[in-house]
Length: 265
Length: 284
Image (cartoon, rainbow over all chains, first blue to last red; front, side, top):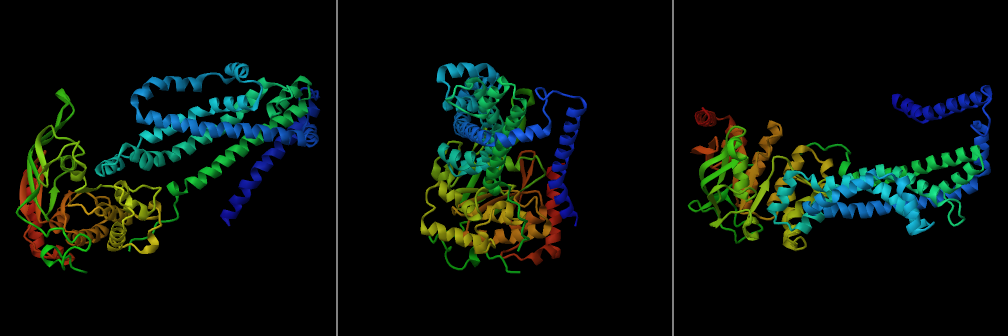
């Protein structure tokens, strides 16, 4: 009884919040006579969403591809860098400050530079998405590879395991949960990276992602369409985050599976 | 309760290693001579092992008994070659133990940790066969037979083999850990308070299991515990440790096979008192 009630609540409560906010928004726009160019009402936005659905879906697909490829690159290269760091403390000490640079550099500052070097294309968008989303992967996987239970390390030493065996059979599998954790953070970042890069790519006609749509709608003062594109961006972030969560639930089943202990025989 | 047969009561040669010798009670298989070890340097240096001497004969089960912090677990790690002593020598099967010792020497020993230390991403079977896999012999039929046999011996059904550690209880994990340690047929099994976290009933069951395994596989065991009853029940001899030294060595007067009912006899209670006194003397 309680269970079904909480299930009902968890699915209906967010919808209710959305309806309340939309209603307040609607009446606020009317009451304060806000011009549509500043803030269109929810109905106008819904209308824009309906009108632009095809354009937005195509743009979302392009941006999703860029963000997903960027995230994949982060997962691959971030993990490889972390493996190198785990194997050599000298390299870790020498290179870690530059990895922190990736975390602290303002992406809006280097995106134009990357566009000059790499061009107004998909590759540049992926590059920006990768740069912005790689740090959580490196930091998490390095920590996962290095913080191995003392007994497990001793177990491998007792068997005269080689460095390679310890890496592939102990450190890497033990770091998988950390990789997934890093990817959860990176998934949102990669969408931000892709959209920011698209702002700079602009509406050159070569590339039509959500970011380019947004710059074009802003230039034409189409605020309702801009908000509709913003909503598509949010959906995109949620979709990618959801996909990573799905992946983590599948991959981590072995690490966190808890189907009840069996009693001792 | 099935009695625990050992050594002389062993029915024929061991199942999987017919060449393995039966107990030879004269040759020390582990010998520690003047082992000295301190942690830290300078004024903050703390002596953990203080010119310690210990000899364990082949086929014996010796318990290292003492309070927490007396150096029991450290001694076990020094013997395993996981920590190097500052001074003194450790010989295992007449070969000197060092952190860079030959693979063949390291492979003679197996370690059971205080926690089961199973890899959560591997199934029970994959965990138990891991040491053989690291040695590249996991495909050999005799290795697979051994692992199958050991899993049965420690009480697992075939249906359990594909389970992951998170699906096993504490006692099951520890049994898996013991099976893994035995899967390489070690000459010496080093156990570092393996049952400390388990309740008394389970601990008693696993004590019997350990005696059964010791008998079947005919291996020497060095068992760290702070439980007097467990030390008496399992061992041929008890080395009472105090402040990094062996304060006293007591030969346990009960013959094998041992049964759980032994623990409730007046002789056991009397001997328990004797060991407790020795422990108190060593730590006074």
